[in-house]
Image (cartoon, rainbow over all chains, first blue to last red; front, top):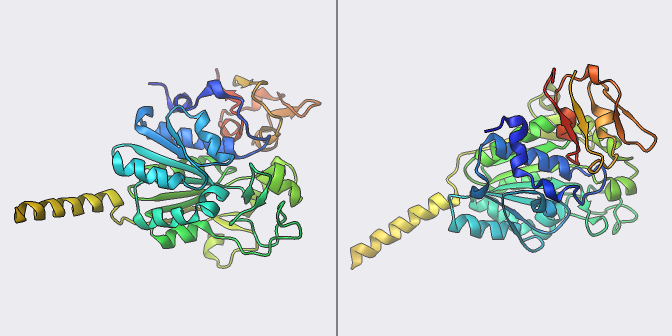
Length: 279
Length: 64
């Protein structure tokens, strides 16, 4: 068994590299964090299913050597729910972008969290629909320029972590592609946690969102992540209000409610017992 | 002293390794591609490997 320093490469389909993502896109960093989390948990590749939808981050399954299910736009969580319900012994990781997972597939997101099904959703949030030309999504901040909000976004954005926490997920965390060692840990803990786990990964899209909002090239956008992220346990976080544009990173919520498969099994046993009684 | 390998086929010249190496090990060539300029300062912390979006970097262990 190789050490952790190289074990993560087992999960990476290196023959597919170089990948399709733009220079400075954070998707590659998030993919690296996911492979390191899988390696740290020593999960056999054939016991892991990565489910994706459509979008830049939805292409991540092409670069992974685990099982993969590439579904339709916004429906990755619906497919993943089916996989987990039928084969509870598998580890199911769902990769979605903010357009795929929170805008087109927003309803699946809240209901997967409400059901508390044992999946891990890793949502890379780059604040727009990157693949199709940088259109506005449900996480585009108010006032931001996208290809469909040329004079600024008139709508407010979702705080995905608060949404998913309120919907009932067992584990909710936010990281960035700048804070990589922490991101590895958050994904690892999310996968290890029973019930619905949600990890939002804030990531730069220098090609569309960065260019239109004059945020500079990838390096500049990474510096912004460094400046704007506030660790949830830090003194600044406890001090009160967050400055405009800043956001919390770290583990934001954790509970131990029963997951869907456990509750379903209980119900099934009850129904079976009732069936034997009456016959 | 660490062995630092840059894969030119994978590197897309984003400049992240150059900007965020805590020891400023990397410099840039005329096209913006990273070059190892101060290998003796590398502590093998691995941050450049983790932050490289293109899986283009490899860093050996300290002293190797």
